[in-house]
Length: 289
Ligand SMILES: [Zn+2]
Image 1 (cartoon, rainbow, N blue to C red):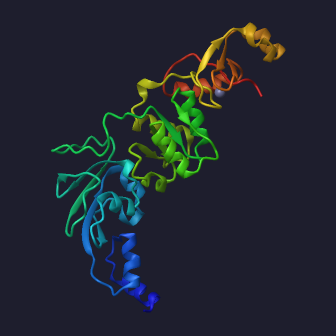
Image 2: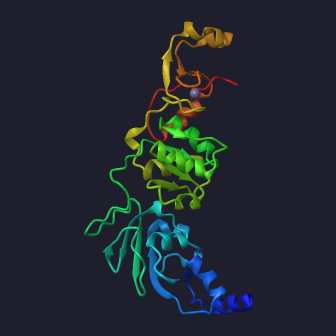
Image 3: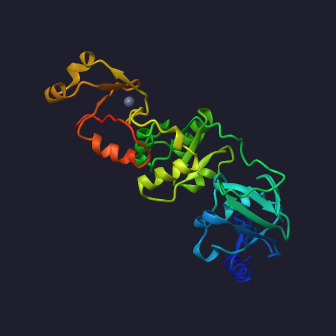
């Protein structure tokens, strides 16, 4: 079998605006080419941001063999399942386990789209039971901002993907990442795929996605380690302070986990400006470097 020649035939047979399920590509190369089944997908609203420009805002053919789940079909087209809030097939709501059939027409809506359909089919447990978040290694700035807002946020710059998935399950945390492939893990119910490269815009997106407007408790967590901050007597930490800090500040907080001491220092104004975009509050700052 001449694989490159067959691959060319496969390309020529692919209709414009169509996607072929990945395992079908290998099948077409290795075997005689057979006509695949065809479904139509329309992704709505911001889900289009995950699609190539040529496939946005339109109905797209999806070619497949066998019976892939709709979760696999959606993700094969670039959209993580965690971004999806509602799927209908021929206008009937379905779950991720539905198996695609020839001539099916799918409409896929984002989380928080406001679109509803009956009978209601939950794509994940509701209400959200996650008690916190875990971020991938590329989101260090966002991790600090989330901690600044008081959100329970795990982050380390050496997590690998299996560790992030394991911790998200073990500690019931939503996964926030720029790596959409990480969100393909079936065991992840709650996640958020970051598209912006600006940390403040990323934070706005997180607050909107997880409805955190009423959960903001600024300056309550350690920016370095995520531990909770508690008031501490000046006398008990005075040996850790510089002379000018002793002279000008009397209110201090200490991280319950790493022991880092915070007060309303020179960084406070910048941090307060960031926080004030979302709420109004008193603040403390990291120690001056
Ligand atoms: Zn700490």
